[in-house]
Length: 166
Image (cartoon, rainbow, N blue to C red; front, side, top):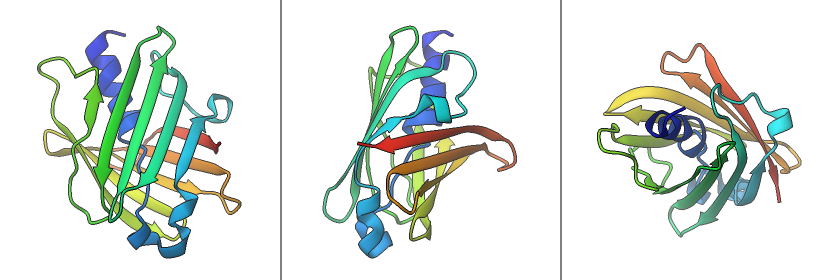
């Protein structure tokens, strides 16, 4: 898979499909989303093409919002880092991607909204148009987070990512 399509896939399926709730939105349950999470590839339904071999997600509270950092390394050894600071307010937030996307890649944003105390929904947009939605849920014991990403119409599941808390 060439660089630009691999990066687009990473942004949609990993970097932006993975978002976590803020303290204000979850009250006492916000701590369940904080910390370091590692992809459990064996339990996940990964995207086609060059799937990631290692994904680490780190989430911290930044006082009034959240900071999320996702590092994705593909089978080909290409690493991407996606960082975003956001709040659970329905507004669009733009990530910072390293290395920078190639010229011509559409601008990407993500918004977040609470579903319940242990889950939330995020909407991923490219060039202002909805590209995908994801629902993230932390297990009752707080040790597993499952993220299901669907196409823009909300029908077809693109992937299911399972993360273990470290």
